[in-house]
Length: 182
Image (cartoon, rainbow, N blue to C red; front, side, top):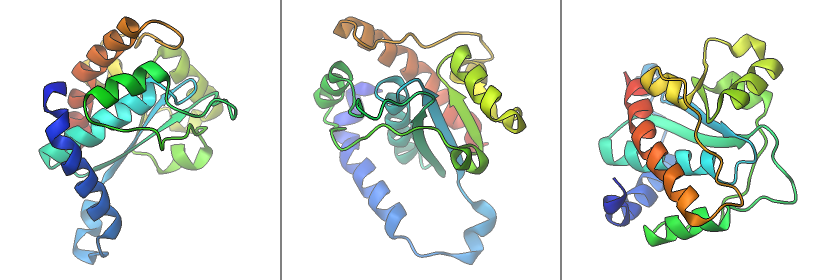
C-alpha cells in the first residue's frame, strides 16, 4: 500500500477538502458515515499513523467513513508526531507536521461508531472510563481479524521499530476500514 501513498496524497487532500465543503444532502442522511476513533497512549505515533492510513485507504477505495485519532494519556507538552513516524510519512509524501495530539473525550466515544485501540491495555483504559461503550470498543487486531495482538509501541525506539509498526498497521487498517464499511 505504501508504494502508492505518494500518488494518493493529492487524492487525500481533495477528499478531505471536498468532505469539509460538501453541502448537506438530506437524501444522504440515512447513509451517514461511520465514525472510527483510533486510540493509543499519546496520539503521536500509532494512532495518528492508523488514522492517516485509514483516510488514505478510504479515499482511494470510495469508503464513506470518518477517522480521527486520540490518546488515553495525551501529554500537553508533547503534541507533535514522533520524529521517526514523521520521517516515514515524509518518505511517502505525507506531511503530518500540523497534527497535534488530542486526549480521548466522552464526546469522541459517544459519537464514534467504533473505538479501535492499539493495545489491550488501551482498550481496558477506554472501557474503565466509558463502560457504556463496551459494544463498540475493540483492539484494532481484534476488530480486523479476531486475533489478540497489540501494536508494538515504537516511541523512543530506532526507525526499524516504526517500520514494524507501519507494517503491522498496513495489514490491519484496510481490513478494519473494509469491515466497518459493511
